[in-house]
Image 1: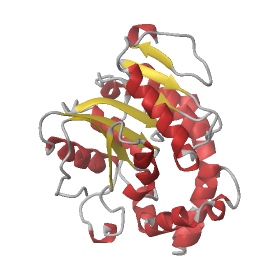
Image 2: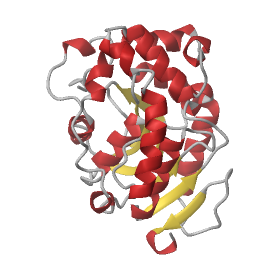
Image 3: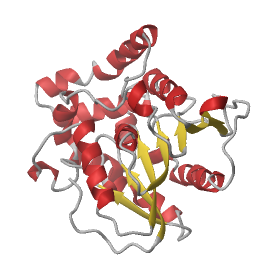
Image 4: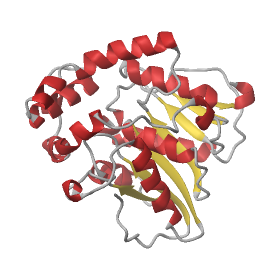
Length: 285
């Protein structure tokens, strides 16, 4: 649930950061600092996430969080052009919100969405195999109420390394543990109704769609499956894993700056590259 009190934003461009699972607005503070005043930035904590998250009410899931985001955008004063940035679960929320064509949004940058709404039967098989490898170590801890161990197991899976959770800076570990209460709700959320091919095709704003070359199979599959359904898409595949935003905030913001600069040029098809962005339109996909 977003704060009902909006900061006083200046007219012009606003980069709005939307966090993923086991996180809240705090994860984006280094990124906002990296913006260096070039553009105003702000991060939201979604319903049930953050320090007061356990006091929230209402549904939990992509559908609800997308509606919350839309309401937040609608409360903005005129003259503000929003560029949405979402990672993982937050990328799913951003894409779902964009299907409702919010007039305040000028573009979006999404990294590693994870909801499999556009996968083929064969792709879904690959997705489920990798999802099992990622979540099977988490479920026993959840069933026994061992939330701290469940958090560590999920972060290890996201980072694709045993012990990854404990190798992070303590500040990130604490942020993730502070959001441990959301894990059960996330595992039980309702299907996302807007993340299908037909609904995604309604998105008209320019979108940079990014996935790490070393991200888990499930994230790469989902990101690639979304691409054909976007009207104006810029494809980016950095040499990174799923945890790129946390591991390399400076590089992530540099890619975001490139996204903003690209908005000034016509978005046309180019040859796909693993380390440079590719600009495409629906006709060139």
